[in-house]
Image 1 (cartoon, rainbow, N blue to C red):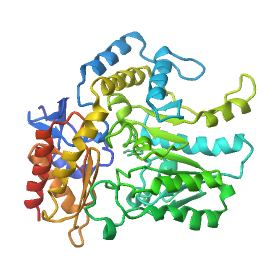
Image 2: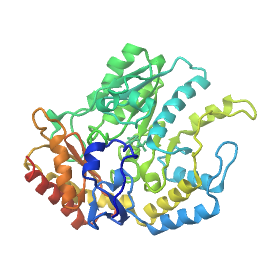
Image 3: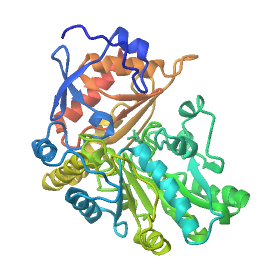
Image 4: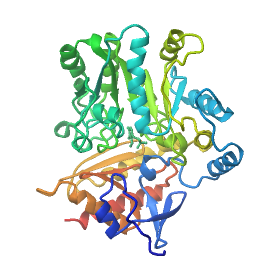
Length: 438
Ligand SMILES: Cc1ncc(COP(=O)(O)O)c(C=O)c1O
């Protein structure tokens, strides 16, 4: 490759100076593999960034986007529409968990989170309950990087440079409980009672009549794969119901088959009031996010606004972008035609087995898994957190396998088309990398 000038691009969530000294450059992708600029094949153990669930370069998706760009490249989404937006919404509503059939499009997971928080506050207001303005998130939660998302989010490193929060926010404690749950396969036995804190502390402290919504990831992904304890989400639902608080599930990672089911809401049999999703919604091909909303919420907005008035003054220039809609429709077709959510479910036993074979490997202090996601938590190097994790990531990369690392936790979340042999390679490469890392 000719020498690139890398000065101008300030890379997101990247150690820029380190990267630019020894770049890891991806130049093409197909199926389960990236190709780097040296022509090496890299097994994609992370579905890009938890988004390429159907694998790379899927022909029906590529062709749908190509056709769309040559037909209608852009259409303003305010006071105008285009057919693909309605088709995409209908398609998504048809596969949504029961009772969540109103779709509001955005362009990312971060936008979805902030939109959901605004929608929750506005919902109470338009139905005459304007005191409900407070929002409850959870420690170690990730809801993207916008001000709403980091306010309810609980990843300390993502907040410390921006100590400006929405004013009316509190946090549940994280469900992570290594002492009781280390090396659990699937859902941990212990910790449903962490949900009770919503009632015993937060609601008591704030008064329930001031709380608009609780937002959680059903499975916390970006913080390092924290699986919800058995019964925890049901308990949250019950408490929210008791006090008229909306429950928002951030399914940006868990939607579209990741847990071996279509949605976490269905997997755990808990119906939230709003789901936010993105990533797998368009297979990562064109940026897109969405909210799935109960009609009762939607209808309150419709009833409250006067004739010809805008019911929800919110949206983005690129909401329901024609290319995103075309990509999403084709993506949902591929998921269905290839039975990919079922495939993820069927492979999850082997995936779990291979992940847990790393128990006892050097540095490993916990392994967690569900569906096609696994987190491998390492002992940190004394005085140097995150360094060991990054070294393992680099060693895997050198061996042609892409994993994700957050702090000293490795996260594995391959496209749902992965084969059994590739699952084997993924975890054996991680095992070798651990062995070779100090
Ligand atoms: C649960 C969750 N919410 C929101 C986001 C933010 O999505 P985006 O990066 O598309 O803004 C992410 C991204 O990883 C996520 O995992």
